[in-house]
Amino acid sequence: RAKQTKHTRIGLYSEELIDNIAAFVSTENRIRRALKEHEFVPHYQPQVDMNSGRIVGAEALARWHSHDRGLISPAEFIPVAEETGLIDQLGRSILTQACAQILEWQRSGIRLPVSVNISGRQFAIPGFVDQVQDIIAGTGIDPAQLELEITEQVFLEDMDEATDKLWQLRDLGVSIAIDDFGIGYSSLSYLKRLPFNTLKIDRAFTRDICDDARDVAILRAILSLSRDLRLNTIIEGVETEAQKKLLLRLGCERAQGFLFHQPLPAAELTPLLVKR
Ligand code: C2E
Ligand code: MG
Ligand code: MG
Ligand code: MG
Image 1: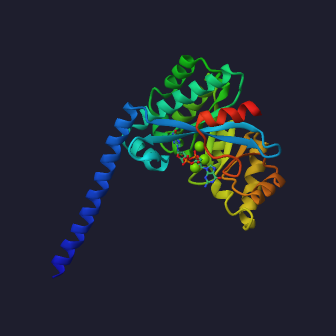
Image 2: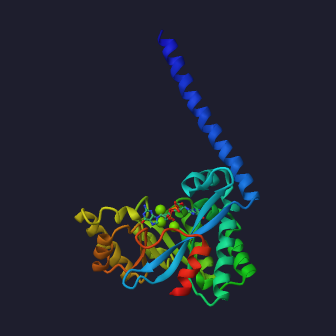
Image 3: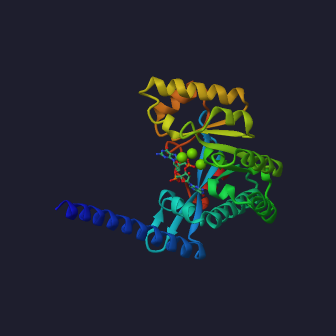
């Protein structure tokens, strides 16, 4: 009897495992096909100066326009792309498209810094710096208009090599932002050792800011640190007027959030930039 229960348990477990593997493999195959059919495109979420509402930058966020399933969010495909190594091709495609967009804006007299997310696995590819250099040279953009967003994931493997790469990227003239700051393992010593230009505070700190004095205390500390280290600071996830007011009182000016703008296709963002 005991044997039977055990067997059943293993049976259930295996079935679930097989389902998971099947779903994973099917997503992998669909990503492969989607890459061939150019179904991945960046949308752009404006970053604003909360004092004036003026758009001062934008973050490129990958979207999958699947012909059979509609618009798919990155939470569904970025992890699979990372796990399978397809993130190399996917990340390169998003970076190339973002640079082409920077150029198009540049040509119509619009200067807008754009930041692009780089996953840990993509950053670790030996030719990554060359890849970025080739894309910049190929499109002919002003590298000062490009910012790469990385997370602390990048330093978990080989800190010295990652530091080296960051300096090489800075030498190309691009900016570096540390994304999702404050969650995970991000350590304060990174801020001293690494050549960041921008610190993006994770939206985990914005969410409860109006109800939780501890979040205000943490935010105050991060803001003061970021200022003293002469970094640009961006706060993510601003959704309400109350949050905006409080953040402005704390001296936080640059923000990204649904209160201001959702991520938009380039064609919808351009008219907003022309109006600026
Ligand atoms: P992230 O880089 O931290 O991007 C910010 C995420 O917060 C975006 O989600 C954005 O839509 C969302 N967001 C912005 N304002 C608000 C707000 O006010 N409230 C809430 N609740 N959310 C807000 P998204 O586009 O779903 O992207 C999720 C994550 O996927 C990104 O987090 C990033 O880590 C990853 N990702 C997106 N595109 C790429 C890419 O091209 N390459 C890589 N490697 N990762 C990407
Ligand atoms: Mg980001
Ligand atoms: Mg972030
Ligand atoms: Mg995030």
